[in-house]
Length: 112
Image (tube, rainbow, N blue to C red):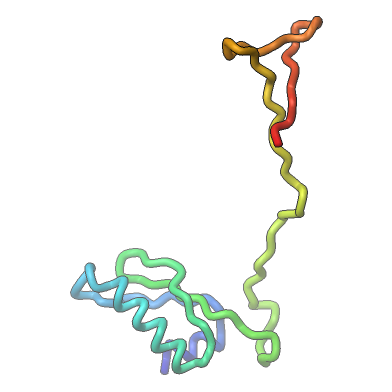
């Protein structure tokens, strides 16, 4: 109940002291805790990071919820379609040597 109440204040929380006695059971305990929180809250809860005996969990706030949007984690990327193009490769002859033009520079072609 205390952990699920923390998700109302922040999307990302850290729980310390999980499976304190057994280091091997930490992964299973963390995932079981995430599943039980998911059932209790009714929203997806994901284990983001496990370090030592601390577990970081993420539960996204939905758009219809009454929460402070300034505390919301912004997920953004700088990717644009067609942004990256393949590097032009120099043409090689049958011996594997780079073919040069009359100026001594390599002839390049963009691979398909």
